[in-house]
Length: 283
Image (cartoon, rainbow, N blue to C red; front, side, top):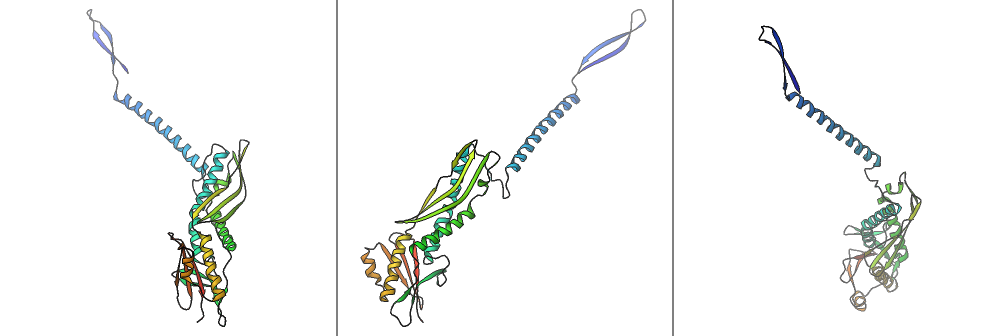
């Protein structure tokens, strides 16, 4: 900032004259004004950016939170659906199989023995005037279907519905999600077959089947339980030690007799997985 100083001086001839001097000075007040204007500009920019971010978050939000992701293409979206199906199966498969095996192959047995906190279904009931018991053992196929139904319910309750909603640029068409269960040696195998397609920019992709397995010899343990019940229903007794020797020690059978019933606990050698059945006794 330039400051002009004007002063009157006495000239040599006795007359008054005018003298002008220029003084350059940069005042603090000027610097402060510039700094304040700079700060206001920065705050305005930050404010605009925050508004944009908040607007984007609300745009991406669904009813239960910020869960709707952005996908580059249809394959990317389909892969996200497959990952979520895998997550649901992995979190539900093992506990569901354990519960089924601990209750004699039924999730809701109509008649059971409460044994150490477990509802062990009665699979054979002793008759008063007969030697053997009456066989109520569920079939292996009915156990498979029970497991299949339970997993369908679990997956539907677990799956992220937001992935099926799509967006302005992505079309998701969803039909039924079919689940297939099989017993393969020491494993339970689950295949999820989703009828879902994803379309983006004219490209349509089908969601692939998801296959998961859990190490649990459910089919093998069922076969042992079935042999036990068959002998009890036909002969009225089961030779526990003879049976284990005949199977070369591959299966361990423990017997407990909480009056008046009998509970058989079956597991495979070197495995902690167990299958329980209860025989209803006569008081």
